Image (tube, rainbow, N blue to C red; front, top):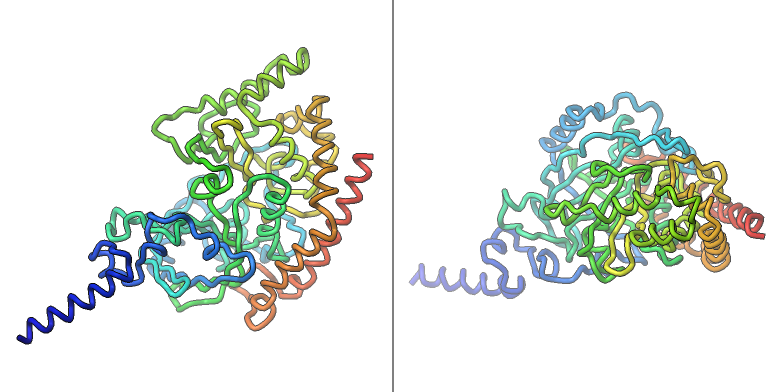
Length: 466
């Protein structure tokens, strides 16, 4: 009778748990009672309202633990990325306008950053629930290098929720409310802490597809308990959910290039999907057509050939928006920080990425596109083609007049700053070594600089298009 009663109680408890978890696998539920179809499974649409709210700051807790933190440090040394806290000099937060970084400029040097850091297992707490065995890895190039060597714990990173599903079958196809991967920007070289967020918003306002973003407070345990690491911008991963959401499809080739587009090499066009087919004919065709010899002898035929592969109208519009904003760390200065998606009807589309150094005073590509080196042919040839250049000027004026206005930008900047201020310089404060700010006064002085930048660029556009 005693054993029967115990069995009945167990079954009734399990039935209750199973009901709450939408009839999921009992082994999975037993391993993690927080697992529900809506929160953890791959059988739901991405929940943007929960994961990417636009009116509040979410909180995330990540436990890496001492063993895995030591593994991260050893991996960084093994990959010649440096020893944590050694060789970084001053903290990278200074300047407020996004300065610093690697050389490249109009010379077109394509830097080599080597292998990506390895994933380690971590646990994540969010929205009252826990996710186990989540993949955590550091990310970034110059931003990661400067932060890492300065010994700052507020590091840029990625989460991949099913990275370790082979070792832990109970988390097979694990998601965070429908999202498989998420990227976290630590606002390195951005004292305002809002550039990554608002730049993506501005691109979308202008009609350029860009990943969704949202502010998060981060608490990370590196082995000595949870430490407050301040405000991050969480960024949607392009090859996970963004394309399907904004373009209605994601079956075409997705690339994350490290190319100047002067010549084609598979090694400089990293494929993010469709890897078994190994079909690069779309980007190879675009690069070949871009550099065709008929560009100066028969411009109409050259444009027609290029537009068979690439959506040049969309690229020219991106270029107009990007040049008006001033974006230091992207094509024209660096051969990275964008994706290409081969849309079924719209051809290759340019997707901006990693915008923490947008809205800066350092104009690497002049607004009138003068002086661009031939090592940046996508910009150089637009500037030299009458049709594309006229379209470029039209888009610059349209963006400046309709989107990049002082009233719209001030409202956008104020809203973002007001949202995060309590968690930077209020009830919770960013502080070394868990912040890229040297002091919080850098944050409070950054907003006026951003607003002045808009006025400066408005004036530059008006002089350019008159």
